Length: 151
Image 1 (cartoon, helix red, strand yellow):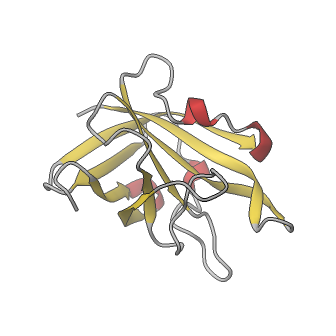
Image 2 (image 1 turned 180 degrees about the horizontal axis):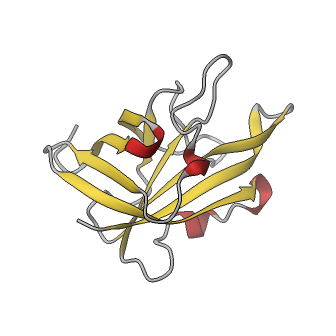
């Protein structure tokens, strides 16, 4: 992993420590997600962690037989800690500002890719929630966590 790219995300409160892979965009314009439920994906269309703006990381909430990496993302609240280690070994510390669960058709991707109110440098996380939508192999809601960098 390049020195300035994310390689590991840690969220101690929910038992997350995982590698971060680079993700782009699918042919339908949607954001890619990791192939398996144990990795996180940094969206390359967002800023790099440590830059002004919001870095975006996604992961699955569940798989066919196991809970996914972000399966408990909805239990995070204001003040909870998240760390991102970059390729050079430096660790960036973030603090949750707010968490929301929204219907899939109400997700504002422009807001997701920007820092939340009053934050200059953030890390925003997203995963699936709710009921399975049979026709599309996804769920009908998204959990979104907005953070600010604290060190």
